[in-house]
Image (cartoon, rainbow over all chains, first blue to last red; front, side, top):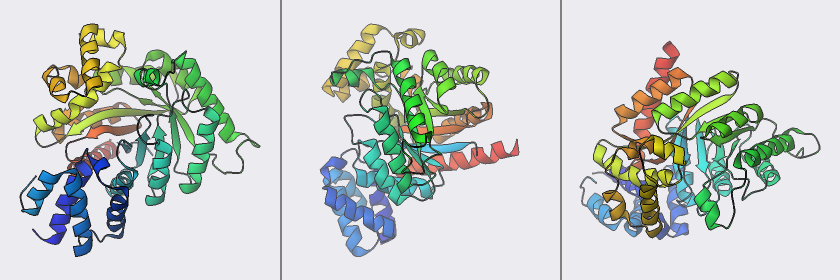
Length: 70
Length: 317
């Protein structure tokens, strides 16, 4: 899976999570800003997106990062 | 401009997520966003300020603001201020709210129909009368009522600009439409506010639907519960389970067909058939509310495809 595909899969994990209160607000807005700018698949933004996903959905995130379907 | 298709966003989620979601909703081609209001969640109006700044075309509004927790004049002022962030894109819906939640706040829901109608009249007066809120130019804000019961529906037809019909039960939606059509002109806006959960795996869609259906069932009228064959004892049991947040027990008692009365769940094709029927029968707007589905992006994409196909079909008629 390339960076664009990985960003899309992680974004689905994030947007579908019911545990978003576990993501610090500042990190949430940083991810949002990257989404608005269309830069979520850059290396730096992808790292932040993965960090946000790990905080709210650790197992699903690990599966996406291993290239599995969630 | 009918039919409109809108998505409800729930500020149980952080505002940054709602901002991302609103941009996704607009990109997917939807016409509107309603943000639900519940005292124990984040403020719908503050959430809408962020949404206004991250969208350009969609119509936005809170659904529904409650006159027991927010004075009507403050609702009017907030709507007019929101209009400055999203000119010509603001609507407001008012309703009597969730009786159980109000009780938790120590508020008794006295004379709900009269209270809501008085609020609608005050909001419309404040928005349209020179010298009240004329520091703003927000004179095109429509005021709708969130309604379910016959008295609230009937009263709305003479005071409000339209209604958000809070049923997901097809039979009730159709009955309500007949009632509204016999009492209103074409101009009166009729929106079906559906709680939905779609997924390619119907069982997963149902699992996501159950907690939403349970909360709605807990607040349903005794007449409706009796109509669908549910006993008061069962409701009390579900309320206790919800209060404890005991989801395992909730799933154990939710194997009956009652869930279908409070939420449209399943594969996208099932939803498409319903949406097409509602629009053909005369609903001006369909609002997709509730969980939408276990996977947000998947659900949004499937619902937007349904809306495009329905618009095409209706356009041909």
